[in-house]
Amino acid sequence: MALRLVIVGGGPAGVQAATTAARLGAEVTLVERDVVGGAAHLWDCVPSKAVIATGERLQDVAAAEALGLLVQPASVDLDALRRRVRELSERIERQNLQLLESQGVRILRGTGRLLDEHTVEVDHGGGTERLSADAIVVSTGSRPRVPEWAAPDGVRVLTTRDAYPPPELPEHLVVVGSGVTGVEFVHMFSSFGSRVTLIVSRQQVLPSKDPEVAAVLEEDFLRRGVQLLKGARATGVDQSPDGVVVRCDDGRSVTGSHCLLAIGSMPNVEGLGLESAGVELDDGWVRTLDHHMRTNVQHIYLAGDVSGKLPLSSVATMQGRKIAEHVMGLHQVDHRHLDYDKAASAIFTDPEVADVGLAEADAFAEGRKVRVTKVPFASTARALIDGDSRGFVKIVSDPATGVILGGSIVGRQAAELISVLAVAVTNGLRASDVAESIFVHPALAEALSDAAE
Image 1 (cartoon, rainbow, N blue to C red):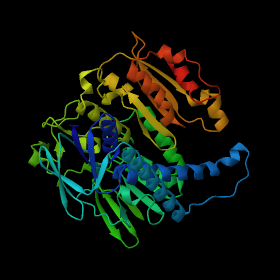
Image 2: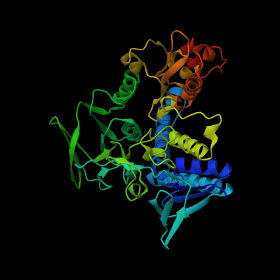
Image 3: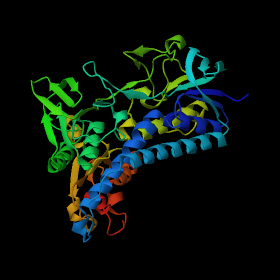
Image 4: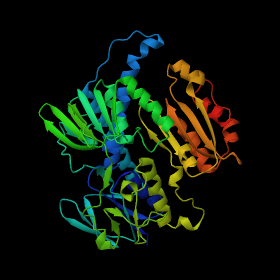
């Protein structure tokens, strides 16, 4: 009899776990109440990147004269942009459904909850159905965190999911939160011509990133006219029919037309019945996870944002694959565990920001001896051809062995270029392995080769 795997939540983790386990011979049922592909992915990630791409094209048109083109001013058609975002999400969901169906995965539309450690009950509108499982994957994702001092209405006070795009372009948007999501929204709306103020609780945007990387991004924000309110933590939002006032803990306040909250996320664990199955929770998060993504109940796994690990679709997808391989016994043969410290990430601002592995600041904080090399894109012919020489490549390596430990990139196409360093970090390649590779000329990737010398 085939192993019975029930997956609650059809995001990137759930879809990957389902297709991988089905190919390996499991009997798989995927339970999803909203969109197959994941709400965080199809309501957040894909729409945000689609809207950002439109903003980037708008900026490219504005800068085209420097490349020898005569252009007419461009503007944003919000209705057309909404249609494009909706069509992209619908197309990706159809592709996910076709993939799952081709692998023989049963898709059950409804809300699932665990009755015990081997039973999932699904409410699918027309009634309920109980599923017996040898293994269970919970991949129900997350939702935007809303602080007690704010009351989003989707009109003046927005969460991230109200802004792809919003009902109207803000005249003056106040963004609360200077992490990854917050800075992407700053870039997005400043590209569309909105005045933007960013409330920065510390002394730099992207507080967890390389200070030199953050400095390049801050410089670009200031060039765009973005106001940075540093060292301030938002504590309240007062709204009226005409606008908002965001109050901060140091007595300062900002008046704008709209406020956007970008201050993290919360796991979707309510009503899942995890306690009924014996799964331990701590302040809403699952308390124990091993490197196989198991909870304290050995055959119940968590993946994606709900796992409390890196909230990236790419990480969720890899978690789903690794869980399926473990469920089907592949860990008993050659099997590489997921290493979160080697996961590449990117921020889709302009310029883009990307990093992987050990950061320079963290190495020094730990007292580790490292070799750091940095090459500006201004030294590459491709950047000069494109008319955009902002940013740099930075590589962190072991001075004794030459093994690449990490790297940061800020600049055009950073999200694509970081893949080279991700492969190097994951596979323990040396800087000389990159330096001795023959790259295309002219290309931005040549900065990688130069930094590896």
